Length: 331
Ligand code: NAD
Ligand code: LMR
View 1 (cartoon, rainbow, N blue to C red):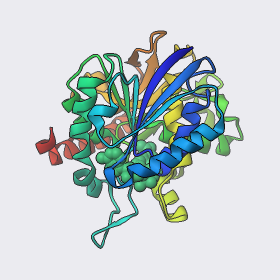
View 2: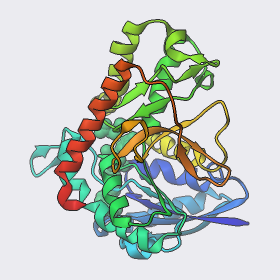
View 3: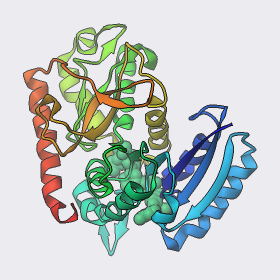
């Protein structure tokens, strides 16, 4: 049987709990691939991972390989094919009497985690490893990790698939469609309330989604607001940030790179800008992406961008430049 080595940080957290069975069950990597899991936690809670290991064993998956627990990223990252960097604190919790409300609050707290993790992955993970940052602020954390990883053959991504799934769900509800009717959903920019979900270039049954919907007022007000603020709405309703849907989106991102992207679709994640669409190089930015048969990820080029969309893209670009400026000392 083939094998894949997958590292998950924050594995004892909410998203980690929702993620592990789906990584190990055969659903993600296929029924002919053994999944070796390296689970990483902070030393204070690493012992809880033994419970996760026992539960995984008790699922009885043929595809489960080894499960090892770590609190040291250098040890955990040896020969890793995939690293899912979930470990970090979410919004909505209180630290030292202060409620963490905004991503900016998370920048300083979480950013530091990614310097060492990036370095460890750059030195020890496989040359063609893929690294997906889920922990917020995901784009800037990925930028820190990628910078310290300093390994150009590895692929760093920050997760925007959850935003793309949210956007598709809103469109499906509005138009009474199946999710599978909606293709080519792009989330431009930051995984934050400035993200821009693009319905001009998304397609419904081969037509532009914005043309199909034919309700610009709904697109520019309701749709945009709901998708951009969905993370907060879930925190407000649940008292904790999204977990099942976040784990699901991480699985979707991994799967999207495991085979060639179909001609009539693409997927959304944030990757290091190469200057495409005039986005400054050196930002981790949400783009439309395709994977080739070898899993190499590239940015879909030459999409038309309206003046309205350009304004939104500039806004989210500026936010990422500001975030980068705020953590310059960590780069
Ligand atoms: P959680 O608090 O339930 O779990 C986080 C876990 O990370 C904890 O167990 C904690 O001990 C661990 N951790 C903290 N620092 C670590 C480190 N240095 N190394 C390893 N583990 C570490 O939180 P959660 O609900 O699982 O959310 C995790 C992160 O994902 C948050 O930052 C949240 O905002 C983010 N998130 C992102 C998206 C997205 O779409 N990108 C969606 C939902 C949540
Ligand atoms: C989400 O989008 O659900 C997460 O990023 C959590 C948050 O803080 O919004």
